[in-house]
Image (spheres, protein in one colour):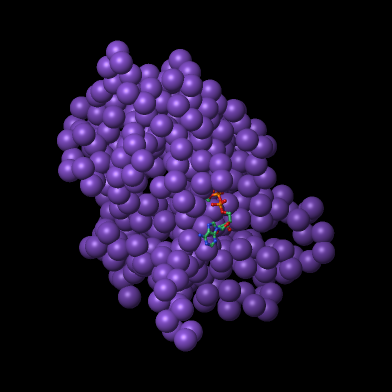
Length: 378
Ligand SMILES: Cc1cc2nc3c(=O)[nH]c(=O)nc-3n(C[C@H](O)[C@H](O)[C@H](O)COP(=O)(O)OP(=O)(O)OC[C@H]3O[C@@H](n4cnc5c(N)ncnc54)[C@H](O)[C@@H]3O)c2cc1C
């Protein structure tokens, strides 16, 4: 079992403390996700942004969370489980590096990283990571968005994306597209908004509304040669393959957020119905899931290419989180969703985690590929 070092225990307590502030903002962000002005300059959101920026790009170093917040997958998991117990929706609504930052860290040259982090240093700039396409969500390698050679130099981006967090808010992001037919030709381009030919619209969502999930269309968006990420890397690591390790970290982080929502529901029942039978059992199940997640995060830190462990963890934890919210709904009795707006919100939010970064069916295929399962059955 993974024991947390003192720095990570301190990170956990800090995140527990600031989760109270996140929760106090949860319903407002859920109701009006585009109105973030009242929240962005809060100490909590400012600190989260600073902590998710690599030290060399920080203008100041006053984050509440210290250096360790994004220093490892384990730190991300420890922090996100506690913060999401406050509220997961507002975590997705904040400005800052987010998933695009992980992709730029993995695929960007020094200059590209510098450009990305300088662009978001004002604390008012959102980032986006555009991979998913309609009807090709789980099979990203079948994406149709293209980078066509521009006779004037560079590339032109053409196509469409769907379910991309925060892209409707503008800012800077990473868009994946293919330069040719094979999966190895899928590359990532840095796109800074506004850009001619780029259109984004908000998709109406019932859960995790803070993420402002967007639909995107690209009509000849100009991509300069130095905006294509990964050119300094070997051909096999320039695009989606190179970003693979990012997905493992993100899977663990998303599982941690789902776990946080599960703990939130459990804590709410304990507060509203002290002595409710089943509190101990649910607490033990959530604590066991947290231990599993810590172990998996430590494994990813030692072996970032391992897809199986994060798949197991995300599959289990997202399912348990849904069970925990259903259990809370039952514990608080008929009408509970009408009487407890936070619980009602968590019951909506909790379903999003299954879909982000690999649906449960896809994770099952990662854990036990179909030929192996057939072999077992025969
Ligand atoms: C809150 C939220 C935030 C998101 N943010 C982003 C973002 O920032 N950027 C981005 O690019 N995307 C984002 N996504 C999109 C997410 O990655 C996709 O929803 C996900 O990849 C699944 O794609 P899909 O929704 O098109 O479902 P589909 O791929 O159409 O799958 C639908 C169902 O079919 C099942 N299925 C599909 N293929 C198989 C198969 N081979 N075998 C068995 N079952 C299968 C799936 O498990 C699922 O149950 C976000 C999604 C959510 C919910």
